[in-house]
Length: 348
Ligand SMILES: NC(=O)N[C@@H](CC(=O)O)C(=O)O
Ligand SMILES: [Zn+2]
Ligand SMILES: [Zn+2]
Image (cartoon, rainbow, N blue to C red):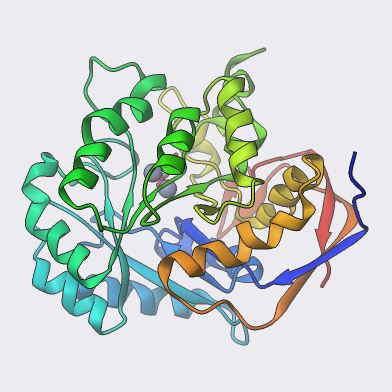
């Protein structure tokens, strides 16, 4: 067993995958992310989605308005790829610093993805341009074919699509997002340096039993769905390995309590309020304290070609009781780890 210190100070971290939503929900949740992270890659799956540079620019303004004055937080915007995406618009948004990445959702893979790409082959001109200009492609890597079991959708995506995308565009910078399987870990490890992956706190903490044993637990349901224990262990190993190809992306995805606790509950876990505390617990339990800063604060900027943040954040060993619910503009959200006691707290 390695020695675990009582506090840890790291460079300010970033969240490389978050859903901040819009309207009242945005107003309520943005501050939780801004308190923990200096920057965040903001997902474009609003309804309707953020498909152009102009829409991303307007959305960025709304996010900045939702952040409390005095908070230093930079939203990094993404454009949602559709069958109609214009490569010139993407390149223009990227050159002007409005867009940081583009996002590929296979049609109907997840929340608000009905406008996603129906045939990845049609994206060739877009992907080719992104490869040329060094713009990152973020991918929700699950197939949506109805004959594929929901627990196999990520592994089948690698085989049917991801390998092919990288064969055609071998220099394209790809983030395989919120990976949930050993297959994805192995794929990223054996791919070139232009391929990386984000890992969420929930996929490091829970396996599918958390969702299905002793009653159905909608607050543990997100997409890609948590897999069996062997996969969780592979993800913990990857995250804490020190490999620069794996970095932090919470996939915090708030839905109201009613939308989650329903006959057809929404996918998504709201983990923004205690994301760092949750991740650190994993690194502490794995005896990988020294790898925490790389995962949280260094590997992501290096991959995106951005500077690391100035300033630091300190977490200390101090119990933290996660509330059962969090009130956000009148709606109740159930956070990840609701009712549990975490062992680490951010020093304020
Ligand atoms: N992760 C989720 O379960 N849900 C996300 C969409 C996504 O990231 O796939 C959402 O927007 O609710
Ligand atoms: Zn996703
Ligand atoms: Zn997401």
